[in-house]
Image (cartoon, rainbow, N blue to C red; front, side):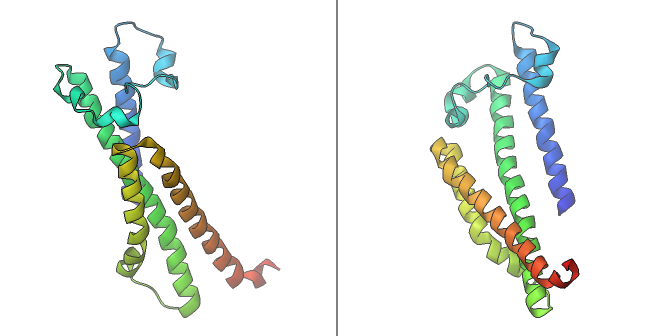
Amino acid sequence: AFWVYLCLQYILALLVLAVEIVNYVSKETRESILELVLGNPLRTHHRESLRHIHDLDSLYTSDEISVAGVAIDYVLIYGLLIACLFESFFSFYRYRSTLVTAATLSDETVSVILRRYSVYAVAFALLFVLTVHWHYLVCIPLVVLYMTFNLYCTYKFCAILIARFRFMLQ
């Protein structure tokens, strides 16, 4: 599963690079190669904001780059959703499996862990979709949920290990 996560990260990075190259090549005014490599954080190929990424007007233009850009944008956005869910699952799996093993000296099956994780995953995916398709300010509770969940899992995992192996630390 971690290998799939790494491959997804690699594909997303290549897509970001492809978007930048398409943007650079499609400009009428050629700029320095340094801007292509470093990018310009103040400019984006979106018209105004993330909310306009699903604007249907851009799909009916004759400009093939804008249609390809919208398609790549969707792949990047939903790829980010999948990457965040993978990362959170790894954190939760590590915490939950350590908790059950430390308490009962038995393993919890992946399906049980996935059922427990699905509550967070559904809430996160719903907020993510609302951020993309409804209003970008929904990203504030989305980021808070993501950070809180992952910090909680990491903190509890470390607390379990410290409690179990305290004698080794002294």
